[in-house]
Image (cartoon, rainbow, N blue to C red; front, top):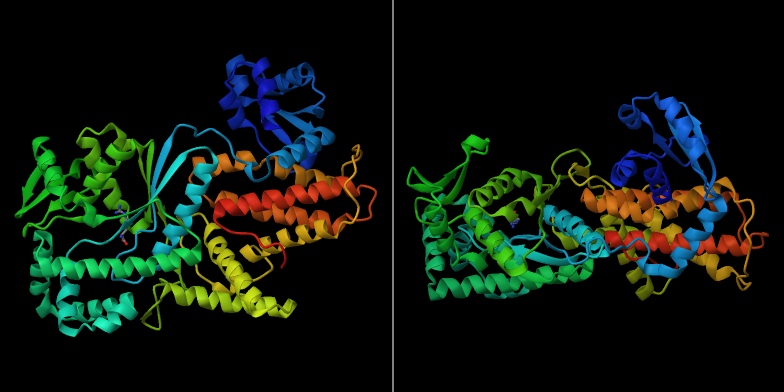
Length: 555
Ligand code: ARG
């Protein structure tokens, strides 16, 4: 619909289509139309009063796609033709099904997205969960727009901590515990070693050995890595999230000397207290540490090497890093270094950040009663809550109960995260996330299942219908359905899945309002309304899919 207005206006005015598109508003009050165009910018160009301009244009546009086009002060208000809107929208959804909302704007372009990236031998953190959920949604949104997307999991599998863990493992490790509960065991060791300053030096030496390829060190490290990845994969399976590539910092251990050479040749390295740095003070970014005084290379050096390697491999149009806000400076620094190295593609590297999860009391949600929180425990807890909710309503077999509870739990967690703008800190409140009422994942799933149940109950075969008198509640719902594609595009442009989440919530609300005030089955509009129910369920499903949430047919 918006496109129709853009086309009409671009024929009569001298402003570009994209500018018109940007200017079109959705009025706060439906009495002012479904769309409005403010004439102020035309006033500047035409040197004429915007009220006059609005009047002039309203007379010039003739289109049966609009009920009326009204000049109101400096605004042009467009009222869409309800029948036209309904027919166009519903038939498009019926035809495109799962593809409704997708487009080809990204065709031929490649996006590499680095996401999740937990550290081996350490618990999968709550921040890694955010990165996984948000990164996955951005990947879904991008591929629905036709981009080729490559999802990389860049494991934290290199660095001085592994020296410490080795020392600790040699001292208090237990092979059976390691096999059985790898991450918990290694993490216990790490905590113990970190408290003991006397092991620091030894740890450094072990990491050095590892970097030099010492047999025992490499063997231990490989074991830690494999076992950790095995545990992470179990979690990803539960979350139903896949990666195209498992990479990690260790992949760049042999490429870093070349990077350091290149930095030297390009005259970017300075010595500072025995270490090598790139001085970024003139850009207000401090110094980027490249090599420590003991010769060990650093996080930033690996990131620079990884970015160069990824560009060689993928020739990406965009490289997105979904990583917590606390690493903002790090990304700014190494992006700047890439630019100074003369890599033009450096400006296509984007840090998509996220805020913290907070506990209900507003504190950082990383430990509970001083104990580290494990991801499996969180999912299981959420699942138990979901089970209770289901059991209040229905009796199911144990198997069905379990599978449904998991889907609801995941919807609760994913949606609970994605409904907020990613940069804001958010309160991780499982009880609220799982509620079947309010702005929650389960509420939207429930709305979807309700729509599906109406469709199942309908006995009559759908008939061909002619439209008359579309009600306001129906019109608002259809307008919302119609805007889906634009919403997906907007979510992509601002890399903000919350735009899709908020859309699905409003859509669910509009549907429930429609359903509560107008009869479907047995009404004289039955066929049309069933089509509307069907279309709504399809779009709810498509929007949830972009968030990584699977729907349930019955709930
Ligand atoms: N493993 C890191 C951590 O847990 C995140 C990695 C972020 N990605 C990067 N390219 N530096 O903090």
